[in-house]
Image 1 (cartoon, rainbow, N blue to C red):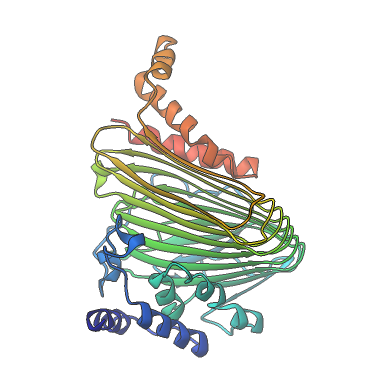
Image 2 (tube, rainbow, N blue to C red; image 1 turned 180 degrees about the horizontal axis):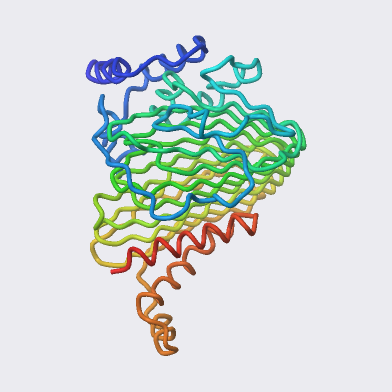
Length: 422
């Protein structure tokens, strides 16, 4: 315990105190002090070494040069830009948007945000401890506060720009949707050399939230992110993440379905190439069902080569009384060589007797029969492999409801695949 306390003290001492919110921040520091920073002996960190995230200073990471136009550049959206974790007003749009109220933690914090800040993160610490989320709540220097009162006039795009090779941003976002409100939230960019982000999403009855995130393409970046969501009656939560490159990426999602007839889907597609540097990608998901007739989906696909490592830890917890639950979980990897590996830990914990829950995990290579079929019809080998990779990722990408956004993600994946052919 003494060693853990010293690690926590050293980590906090190296950070700048965030503005305001003294009560929630103090509570988060107390949570962090009680649990300590994670180590490889912790059950949920045994496949992902947290040493680089525990370090007082980040390892240097060179920002990748843009090889193509920014994702979603042609889309009519409201842009909010952070450069190495610092809000860039000149590059951002005016924050006025019909049906939406937007503020920032660094400015005056509205009452609804002060009441919500840290609440879902604190609830998400049980039964699995998430120390980096508590660290974020305690120390976040900025973040957006989004309250949606109707259907948002257009999507909001949080754009993260990485410039400094030693940047270490900590951002905390709050999203609250009122009854019947709807929002599409986009996140793009690598953010920094090391990035710690928490997003708390509170959905009231009948609200609809669509979240699409693109992480990459910096090869040296390290990131730990958390999404904590509370989903009320007949609400819809959908989150999709595409990740390319990155030395270390850990994405955690903690979703609590509290209302009846609610839906929560979380999905991800990752492309890892160890030839560009170390690649470890970790998806850790925990979905709790507490309402009647609710549906959850976890769909994760990883394509790995040249020593890349992918991990998945997913759990569905069905509480007593949560009858008619429909919970589905699938994690799959496509290994393009013998040097890469995929590690999976699917879990079900069910305390209701009228449910439909399933999980599965598979690992394999490219289907040689399908490859031969394409080659026999004149498709070059590398192009044929790219088509099969996109086909493999399709189930995860299909979780994106908007056809235009889905097409742009697929087009970007095609570009990345064509540039990283063996």
